[in-house]
Each structure stands twice: as C-alpha cells, then as structure tokens.
Length: 382
Image (cartoon, rainbow, N blue to C red; front, side):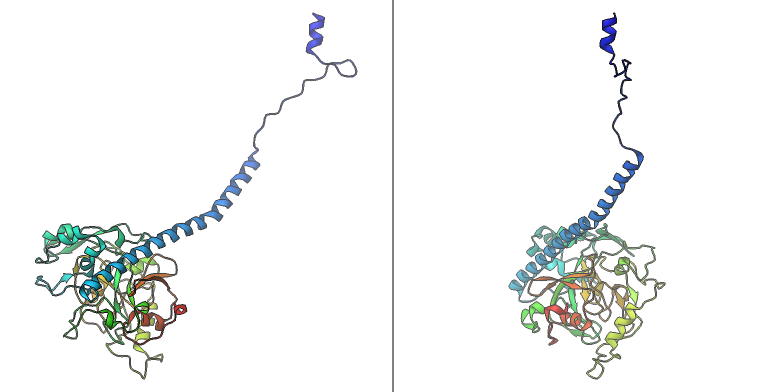
C-alpha cells in the first residue's frame, strides 16, 4: 500500500508532497470580446460603401444597356420610316384627341411584338379593351436603380379606373421653349397652342450632329395616382411631382439682345424653379409619367423630358403656358432625373449613351437638347 501511495504522489526537494497544478481553461474576456466586435464593425463600415458603390455601378451599367437597346430599336425604326418615332400618334380615333405614345411605335424593334399586336389602334387608348397592352410591363423600360416599386398605376377617370404600366425612359422634346419649342428629336406632329402642324424628325434634320443631340434620358417613376401625400422641393421625391414655376418665360421671349444677360427669361425661369421654397407643395404629385399607352402632344411629362432646367431638378410648370399644367405643358420643364448619384444617362441620336452630370452648364445642356441650334459643344463640357 505504501508503494502505491508513493506512485500517486510526487515529492519536492524537501521530501514533502507537491501540490497538483491547477489547469486553466481557455476563453475570451469581456474586454477582448468587445474589442473584436469593434474591429468587425469598423471593417463593415469601411467595406459597405465599396459594396454599395459596386452594386450601383452594376445597376448603372444595366441602365446604360437599356438605353442602348432603345437607341438601337429607334435606329431600326428610322431605317424603315426615315424619321424618328413621333412623341404621339395624335390624332387618333379617341374623341378627346388622345393618341398612342412613342413606346408602342418601336415595340416591334424591341422584340415586343406581342404587346404591339395587343393594341387595337381603332379604339381609344382609354378603352377597357386595351387592358392587355396598357398593363404590359417591359423590363428594359425600368432602370434597376429606381427606388419606386409600383409599375402599374391606376388612373381615376369619370368613366372608371384605368391601369397603365410606366417607364423610366423618356424622349427628348427639346431645349428651352422660351428660345424655340419642339427642338428635340422625339416631338409631336402638331402644336396645339400655336395651331400649326409639325413633322416628325428625320436624321437629315439633326444638323448639330447626332453625337451632340439627345434622343432619350431618364425620369423617376411617379407616385401612385390619387396619392394624398404632400411633396415638397428637396430630395428625390420632388422629381416625381410637378411644381409651379415663378417666372413666366413666354414663347420666343429670348432675343439676341438678352440671350447672354441676366435678364434672359429662360435663365430666370430656371433660377425660379431652383429657388422654390422648401415649404411649397407640388401642385400635381402624381401625374409625371403615370401612363405608358395614352399620349397627348401637349402633355410633355408623360413620356418626354426637356433640356431646360438641369438634370436632377424638379419638373416645373411655366406660368406663360396654356392649360396643360398637370402633365407639364410644352413651355414648362419636364426635367431629366434619376437615382444615379451626380447625373443622368443620356442616349444620343447616334445611339451612344453617356453620363451627363447634374452640374452641367445651362448652355451645354440646352445645346444637347436641340437638333439644329448650331451650338458647338465639347465632350468635356458635360
């Protein structure tokens, strides 16, 4: 028994029994754990902007591709008809004068024949028989950066509720109407305010050069029809509504005498739209781009944009305009805008797509909107 006891015990130098060492278990202290969490939080904070930037770059690339498809489809239409598609097919069989928007003219070239064939052009675009074509959604007409999710909007009319799909891409109606209206590439075939017929634009009319003339750009989706939400200047929501301009820039009110001066009515109109009080509510919060199928020559904000106020500014009515205010009239400013930081994508008449900064000078932006203004615009000006 004594031998067994000796085997189980160890002795120290003095012949005594040494204490068995205590085993320490591994683990983190609370301070160490907090330090690790803090490091992970810092890394996430550093990486998140880079991830978001990469995702936006991918969305913007898809948006560029969408616009290139529109440009290619339009050139195929041009090859067959010798003109760019008109803004609307007005007049049509509709007793109120509504026609069909330019989207439907190029749907066959966008490989959307099933939608085109679903349109009954002998009926009004407000007819319930147009439901299939009116509510058809086309993925290439929606920008991936768009934050709005509702792509079918209800329109409340006296005869009932109609539903229409929408698009983020709009045609170039022209530069400042105070200088000259209908100077773009996707224009109506009639000037109802001036009482004169217009003609669709052919490639020979783009004397400024197709690489210097806008064809399509972007526009955010509108709020749902009938919304009771008040919209104020400031932030991207303001791009989805129509505000009342404060300076009446009458048609052809820019003359050689005031063109380059502070009294230029077109510049004063821009300044008034950009200086709207933050407490000024939009007059029409839910009409911009609310319908893809029906079109009307004077309702610019449905399917068109203007090169007047700079990109990423609120749409603005012109007090000198007639009675087309709810959709922005031909002398107002239906601005180009997007969710892309710092500017908008523009498809030019040659089919190329370039990014135009929101800080572009007014003269350069106006020049890019006119097909025959004689402006000389360098690529580094936007």
